[in-house]
Length: 65
Image 1: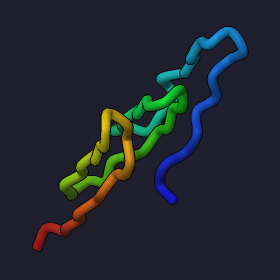
Image 2: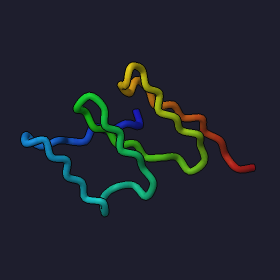
Image 3: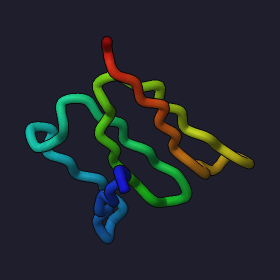
Image 4: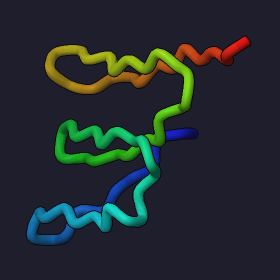
């Protein structure tokens, strides 16, 4: 699975070291949960929501010819 959980402290703080993150990534926050996903080099990535909540992250990948 591409989405990885990101820990939130007991006080509700989100702390990330940007030097440890992938070069190109997305941080998704929904319903008190945080997930990180590395973005592929050639793809169409969409975040699907339903009733204001993130339901799915879709990747349509391709490769240069």
